Amino acid sequence: MSLLERARAGDDSAFGELVEPFRRELYVHCYRMLGSVQDAEDVLQETLTAAWAGLGSFAGRASVRTWLYKIATNRCLNWLRDGERRPRTVPGDLGAHAPAPTRTVEPVWLQPIPDALLAGLPDEAPGPEARYERREAVSLAFVTAVQGLPPRQRAVLLLRDVLGFRAAETAGMLELTEDAANALLKRARAVEFDRTAAAPASPRQLVAAGRFADAMEAGDVDAMVALLTDDAWLTMPPAPLEYQGRAAIGAFIRQVGLNGGRRRYRLVPTGANGQPAFGCYVSDDGDPVAHALGTLVLTMRGERVARFTRFLDNAVLPYFGLPRQL
Picture 1: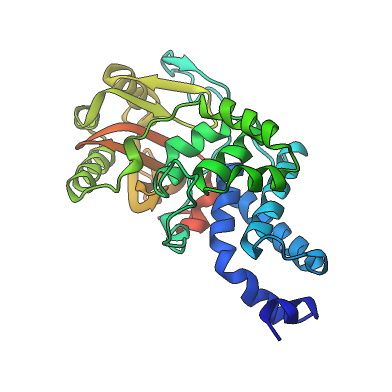
Picture 2: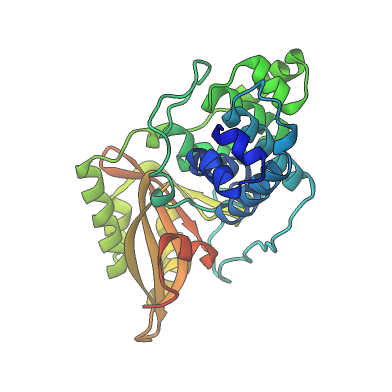
């Protein structure tokens, strides 16, 4: 009796063997769709529960992998349609003396994903329709850009251009005509994203990222600014304020980030979205205990920081294996 037949007969261990090879890639797909490691975990569980319940109706016309992606994608769409299930708040003014931002954007609820959760992805190349390499498709720039798309455009773009499913397969997963799916894809492809972080960070870039972290710990704003590109961005999702350029970023760090010199940082190296990252801990006015204040992800261009993204959410710390305080 085959693994599928055993699973259909009610053997839950056989079902586990059947779906285990796809668990990690399904999780990452849910993360790309939702932008949240927590929501992705919940939706993956929903997907596997639905697959177990619906195994008897699986006709086998598509592969198990395709069938699971259909369930996962539609569960993600349901999750997005149903609205916010997890409490979300936008940070306030980030300090009464915050300088005027370069621009104000719509809040984007986004979490970084630990590199450890990306390590188990299958090594084989995506399907023939794919336009993005695996590393590109987990970069912070890509995931951020995807969150700005309407849900069905998001789904079509990921299924076609990231996973490489054919047009007919994608249309079938979403219960659309091919023409409708292709129209959604055309609109989604009009959105561009920064491909700076598409390549793995080189040893020299990692050293430069370490120098930036050292300067931040030392409260040396001039050294931090010297390591930025001229057009660098500071973003803090979901806060709507964004700062570009050395002068604007330096002013924000001095006034808000370092709280006028009263705040000190301790940074713990990690990796997120295939990029250099750090767990952030702060202590104010000489407090010997440093308390967690989210994570920092760096986008390197050459040996300079082109973007640094401050996530102020501590909810992801357990996924990185980081404590609440040092």
